Amino acid sequence: MRFLYNILIIITRFFLRVIALFNKKIKLFVEGRKDTFQKLEKNISKSDKTIWIHCASLGEFEQGRPIIEKIKEKYKSHKIVLTFFSPSGYEVQKEYKKADLVCYLPLDTKSNAQKFIELVHPEMAIFVKYEFWPNILNELKKQHIETILISGIFRKSQVFFKPFGKGMRKSLKAFSHFFVQDINSQKLLKSIGFDNVIVSGDTRFDRVSEITKQDNSLDFIEEFKQNKTVLVAGSTWKEGENLLVDYINNQASDDEKFIFAPHNINQKEIKVLQNSINKKTVLFSEITSAPLSTHKSKISEAQVFIIDTIGILTKIYSYADFAYVGGGFATGLHNVLEPATFGKPILIGPHYKKFNEAIDLVNLEGCLVVNSQDELNKQLNLLFSDADYRKERGNINKKYIADNIGATSKVLEYISTKILN
Image 1: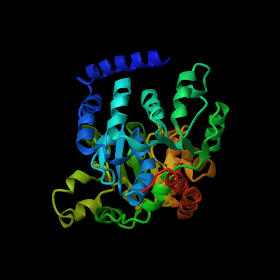
Image 2 (image 1 turned 45 degrees about the horizontal axis):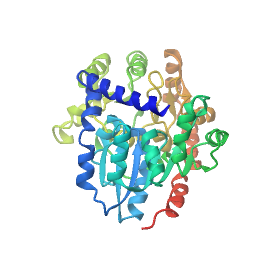
Image 3 (image 1 turned 180 degrees about the vertical axis):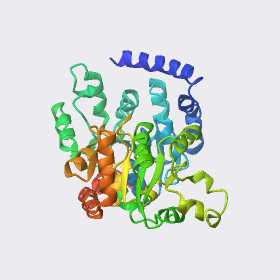
Image 4 (image 1 turned 90 degrees about the horizontal axis):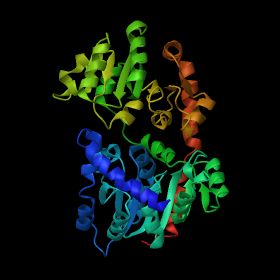
């Protein structure tokens, strides 16, 4: 199986180079990896003590972030190497200051794995949630490098638990310890012979809990809100946007305000969204060319604010009276924990079953599922008109966050027994 895997990786590399000629994201994926080894050679010396953290993309980075920041604080003599698989993670966090080096993980060929581990020579390797690369894991095991998985989640449908998954199960032996999100993951790992497992929970709860303690003020959002009831629609996709726009155009009263923070901020698609709304609308990009004072009336008089930038959605959630989190009508739900930590009721689409936190919040009724335009309209009417209903649902979500913090400290306790400062 390992032989077939290595052949597949080589074939994949070839096709990625071809696709990169026509696809911008794949081009970033391919081009970004060209200087990974050069970066490592330039920034990591043989005498450096290093800790390597790997995240697939941006969501996994948010899970790894509390661990990274605590490691940086405690192990000052170590360099932190942070890698990403996806451009959507790397491109956003390539300037992340808590890591000494941020780069792409090279494709998992045998030669790449050997060279990467040789250059990084980590004292510990930390994988976040998933991403199991057999050649890299094999190299870590061969060199007896302490390797852990944090915020891990396993499902019966994964290859490890199939009769033909022996080769991938073997790769898991590289892990010294698994820190998983739930008991089901622990049971699945135990069923294939792994007892080195702790149910620690999800480090994202610690991350979002910390968010509420920072300064989340945004003067332009305060100017827009004007003490009116505001829905913040975060990480939206076209399918959900269409439903929300229908409500705005046909049912929304003048006392209801809306903030969109689309997942895709492509200028053309932003313009399509703006043109579909028949209420007064303002774009974030329209108010950044001059001081706020020159745009006050434009912002305050608008009923819809479209945030065509990245990096401020979390702060904006703090101003919501309730939130809609996108992806549930499209490719998969985005992060519901960010609005939940501020005690906001949440609306989502029907595709949420792969996300434990969403399942929990739906069962607790702090997160409300809508399947159609009629259901969305009904919930929006109720949430806009009933402050007690909003408060009750919001308190459920806030308590859920508080009840699930602590994963970071469990992981750090283990790390402290393996790394000397």
